[in-house]
Structures are given as structure tokens and as C-alpha cells.
Length: 260
Image 1 (spheres, rainbow, N blue to C red):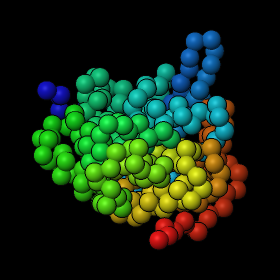
Image 2: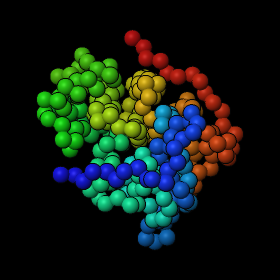
Image 3: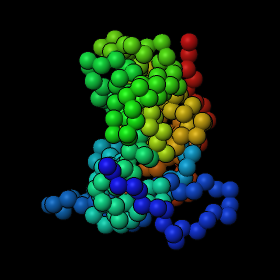
């Protein structure tokens, strides 16, 4: 049985304002590899509950590394990482896995769906390690697929779905465990323009219902359509539209609308 999560840190003061609590906190985080490779250089970043933001930068900028750090898939070389008020560095591997299962949902560029299983089974697999009974897993999977607009495709296998539909199945799988934050790594990278616009519209809609969404992308058009943009280059944050740090950034209010 997976050990219970540590309780929230007792030295975290109760919020006295209406601002949402920090969901993710990185403080002076570095990530280095043998040979003098420095993927992250003293990164500090706070993501609050309910935010919709882009982490944007070219290949090699550090954005994928910061995704792995935020998602607790990797540990930093130095610095502090807190997810849902838990100090990641203080957790055992078992408790870290429990934290990840409870609070973090992942969506990747390539959908990672099982070819021989229908949409319901693919989504239900997201609850395999959550201690949910098989019948309940399938019921929750159907609800998640309804939520992403695929209630009419429940029995279809990946080979019978379009690219955009496959990505929506992957999003439903990430959401079925009701995570605190959805991390979407290049979610439109394998899609045509129209399908990509529908996926981004869905992420906007999910955020509007309360899901915290972080999109990792190299596409500046996608990033500029989100309320907050955190720009990376050479392992450092060069601009953050939430703080006004760095270069001047423009808010874009036009959101792709789903057609048909």
C-alpha cells in the first residue's frame, strides 16, 4: 500500500487574501548533468491554483526540464520544489509517486494510447494505481470523455479516431484522476492547425471550470493566446507576463472557438 502523503507544511501561513494559494513553487532551482551541462540555472517560478499559462522557449531552452521538475519526474540538482504545499525534496519515492498520482495530470505531444483498447479503457487506465475498482474506473472514464466532448466515441479504438480525438482521449485520461494541475507538453505538436485549435479551445474550457493548466510549447502563437507566458532561454526565465519581468509582452484575448 502506498504510504499517505505528508501533511501540508505547518509553517505555511493561512492566506488572509483572496489570491489563490500557490500550487507549484520553484525557488532557485538548478539542474545540471555530467560534462558541465546546465539545463536550469536558478529558476524561481510560482503557479497559483486556477492559472492558465504557457512555458515557452526554443529547443534546449530548459522548458522540458522544468516540466519534468514540476511534474516530479525528475529532481533538481539544487533548489526547492513544492507541489501542493509539499516539499518534493523531503518525500520518499513512494510518497512522491502518490503526490504525482493525486495532483498532476500529463498530456504529451504523442498520445501514448494503447492500440488494442477503446477510448473508455484507455482513459480508465489512468486510474490503475489509484485504488479505484474496475467498474468505477470505467464509469469515471466515461464521464471524463463526456467532459472533453467524446461521449459519442466511447467504444472506438485509437485507430478509429482522428489526431485531435486521440489528443482529447489523452486529456480525458489525464483528467480522470481529478489532478490539481494539468501539464500539457506540446499538446498540438502532432496535430494539424484545425485540430490543434480545438485542443487549445478545450484547454481554455477546462481552465474556465477550475483546472490549472500549464502548456509547454515552442509555438509563440499558442503562448501569446494564453493569459500568462513564461519565456525560457538557456535554462533561465527571460520574461514572465505575470510579474512584468523581462521583455514587454502583449495579452491576446482571442481564444480559438470550437466549430461545429
